[in-house]
Image (cartoon, rainbow, N blue to C red; front, side, top):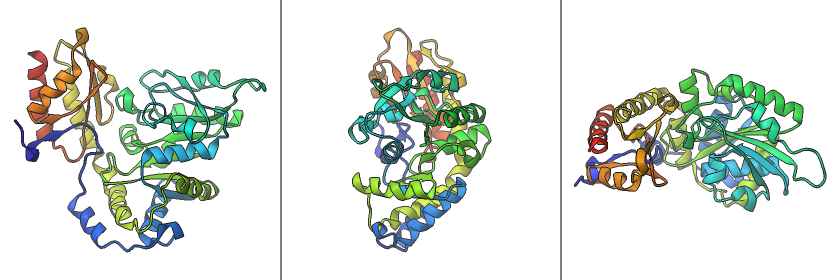
Amino acid sequence: MATASNIIDLRSDTVTRPTPAMRAAMASAEVGDDVYGEDPTINRLEARAAEIFGREASIFIPTGTMGNQIAIRLHTDHGQEVICEARSHVLDWEMAMMSAFSGCSPRTIAGERGILTWAQISSAIAPKMYYRAPTGLICLENSHNMAGGTVTPLSIYEEIWQGAAEAGLPTHLDGARIFNAATALGVGVAELTRGFDTVNFCLSKGLGAPVGSILVGSRAVIDRARIFRKALGGGMRQAGILAAAGLIALEEGPLRLHEDHANARLLADAVATCKGVEIDLPSVQTNIVLFALKGGGDAPALVASLKSDGILCSAIGSHAIRLVTHFDVSREQCEQCASILVRLLKS
């Protein structure tokens, strides 16, 4: 049985621990009351995030879910529909809050590898008639978590931005892992997201901060976002201790994401050698690996076996497994995991 000190945790990139540099920055952070706009470290983080994304302003949010739901509330009215992909995070993992908080219904589209095109989106826009709920927002995700970390290229977004503008519809990007997508595509995040009205990204996933997300947009939009952050209980006080770690994550985290992607590919290639597994290798584009067990294989049982060998991962339903690489898991540990995984799958 593995001990806590040698566990290899591939459940999510949210499990990373603050680096020594982050802990030192948190301990010495200059702080103030952020509800009054007086926390200098948060103000620096928000200014830097806006600069990186080429936006007028940004707001520090406790969680990615809160950031997405604030954005949905900003762009919609009660009784409207939100177009989103059928496996999107805003649909499956945000507690039906687009309905509870914004009074909207999801209009879902199944995208190939999680990617939606303008042709698909345009056909889902509600016709303008008084007895039909109107479309209020197009909400996309990049990279796409439950599609296995797949990325949407800039060319597809450019067509969507043009079509949405002509249709008079706002767009929001759930960019929780947008830096992973940008790394995979070799495009800067500002360029990759420039046509969205708002973008939410996580500091606490691949970038490695312990807490926090950022919502970027125009000055007017972000000023309104502060109202809805407060309404959701997200108004924080001396939270510069969190923002200090976020600043380091924002500057340093993107520089090493390619390592996580290479480690995910190592794991995927190993899994693909096993006959009892279905895996779409071209979909392994960032730091997430999804695979299914053929013949109704028992995913929770495999997760339990891996745990006894010191490897933590997630069952997605009854027959699928998810592995997520991050900076707390080394190349050597991923090689060890691949060996154990192949042994168990072939047995």
